[in-house]
Every structure is written in C-alpha cells, then in structure tokens.
Length: 155
Image (cartoon, rainbow, N blue to C red):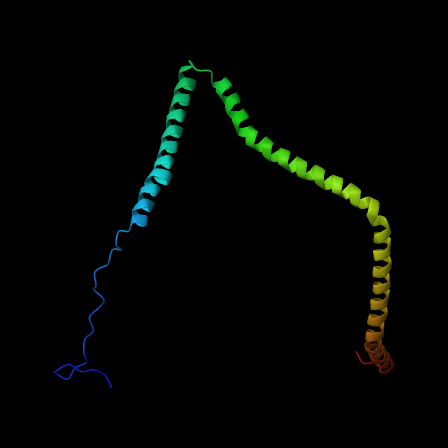
C-alpha cells in the first residue's frame, strides 16, 4: 500500500528542490526587454526629471523675485484649460445633435405617443380589473372573518 525503504520505514520524498529554470533567451524576449527600457522606463524617468527641474526653477524664480510668476501661472492655467475646453466642445456638439434629433422626433411622435398612451391606459384598466377579481375572494373572507369576530366579541 505504501512504499517502504529497505529498513521497513516509509519512503521519504524529496522536496521539490529543483533549480528555477530561467526561460531561454528568445529574440522576441530580448526585443521586449529593450522596448521596455526605451519606450516605457526611460520616458517616465525623463518626465519625472523634467517635472523636478521645472518645479525647482519655478520655486527659485518665485523666491528670488527675478521671474514673472504670475505670467507663468496664467500660461499654466491656459494649458490646463485647453483640454477641458476641447472636451466641453465635444459634449456641446453631442448635446446640440441630441436637441436637433429630439426636435425632429417631436414632429412625428405626438400621434404615436397618443396611440401608445391609449393602449397603455387600456392595459392598465384590464390589469386593475384582473387584480380586483383575483383579490375579491380574499377580501370577502377577511371581511366575513372580521364580521364574525365583531359579532362574537373575540379580540
């Protein structure tokens, strides 16, 4: 049932102590590594360095009073608002298109809306009548039970 060694004890299993196998170096893997450093890591490092340098230069110019901080603040505000304004313009164009389509649809819809409202009201009336008929026996039994309780004085 269980494997035994020569002395009659259970066999000991070696733990998985295999060395981790490094995948072979393929051409595509080397290209990926090179692209990672050149296209991802290097631009991120350069952007961080540029931001740090600009922050240091702006703080030096603001503290020494030699630079025109208000002008740079206005320029920064303009550059920050340009993408917002472009996005808002696209939203305005979409809104204008929807208003135009709705105005066109309102020319056609009133007659169809009246017909739809008529059929919905008919369905609502039929559903109310069906639900009244379905609940009538239960309401009758409850009212008879309440009448009997009132007649015999049971609480």
